[in-house]
Image 1 (cartoon, rainbow, N blue to C red):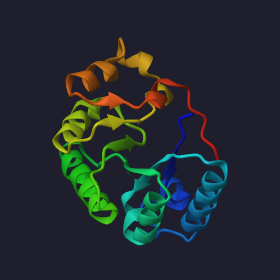
Image 2 (image 1 turned 180 degrees about the horizontal axis):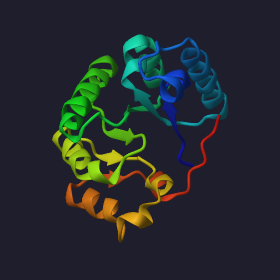
Image 3 (image 1 turned 90 degrees about the horizontal axis):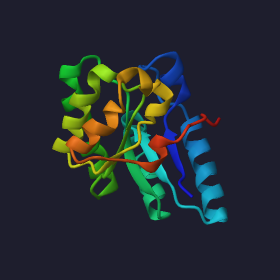
Length: 169
């Protein structure tokens, strides 16, 4: 079983990116950790940088319970800022987690940014990505362009990326 979750604050993701992180993130994440613990499930938690900054204790708790952490990225304002945004988030999470970060996920990855995204992941030694391309209707990109680019940059697509994904709330 592959289980991943995005750890982000819906108020930031839906309403306004500059809103402060709410306490709902802590409550929901610790509830999910409890479910995983009781069900003997290990997961990958993709954490948004604002969550890592506000709740470094949550990052350490996720790791102490045997789960993996990865970076969850919002699209950068421009392709030229993508590399610095990704590098900052990976370095920050790695420092808090006290381990190398191997996994990433980009919300709403646009086809115009995918090559810059792959370069940034490769530059930061990310081994695999789980950006869930099926939700972006990749057929409009041509013949599986994302898979070709990921292969070119030696980044594995997390197995879930090939599956249809339904958001859970």
